[in-house]
Image (tube, rainbow, N blue to C red; front, side):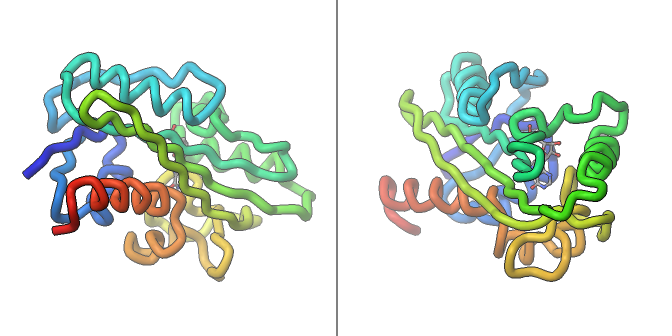
Length: 196
Ligand code: IMP
């Protein structure tokens, strides 16, 4: 089976991606590929960070790989935290601290509109391909649910009454930005290699 290295150390993302990319490609996380590095995200766009990660892994291994960068863009905060979503609050407990900071900044603000945006950079046979997925929704007034990761407990996608953290992986995939970007990648691979 063809192998694709997914340039991430986030096991939630690996689970999500594996749940949508079946059959034709075997996904290896960085750890599973024996690459024990943490790649920086120094740029001010999701696309540049995604490219940085996939190019770094491609230079190291020469193998086919992809990476993704995701940001939560909140209307009332002029698109913040956006590309800085991972390090929004500089606390030790990344997911909980970021979410608390977001809720605090939106206190007394009625406009709760937000969107998750994922950009994937894939390097296949030495060529880069980009894919994007967007999920629009609302930031809740308080956290609910214990599943998922990151901002999931406060994000309610359009078309749902509950947060991502209250959904199973399969339910989250019905709405998710990452799933949408992955679907484009899958369609591309199916087109290129034929569906099996
Ligand atoms: P990165 O793509 O790993 O840089 O993620 C940016 C930030 O957004 C991290 O704090 C993640 O926890 C958060 N994040 C990324 N994807 C999701 C998601 O699907 N749900 C909730 N939070 C996410």
